Image (cartoon, rainbow, N blue to C red; front, side, top):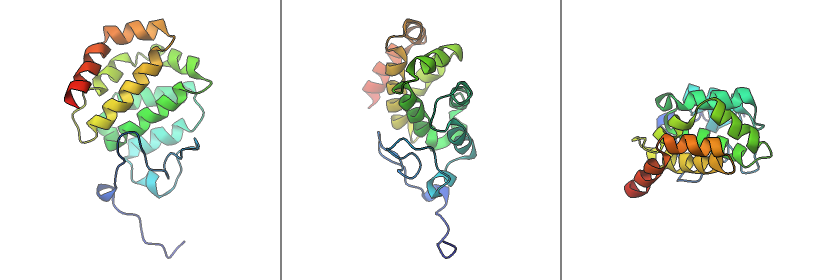
Length: 163
């Protein structure tokens, strides 16, 4: 609608509580990140990775997600949304492939680091990182060993103590 007012600036965007996200961005029905009003409010790096990731897991999209999570400052408050996309994939029929990609891309350390991210969205980041870790280790001994070696147990305990 050409008469519609412009979207609010990114600073005014309201971010969801833990475990929730803007419905326009990632519908509960599993739709792709839209080009709707909610998507433009995200930092460019987050928009790029969520659009590239689409709905269906792929090796390239998983690499883009893992690479983006190594620079959480570029994603800003969208880190929980990126982690949630990864978590959804770990519940999909492609779970085994996603687990293998996490191992291949050595994402273990970054997932553990995200458990202690001290930003305004740090609690939500920790929540989703913990969920991703749980699914990444489910039935995957290499991920379990690598995440334990990276400090996941201490990181999760620290997250619980802080929140």
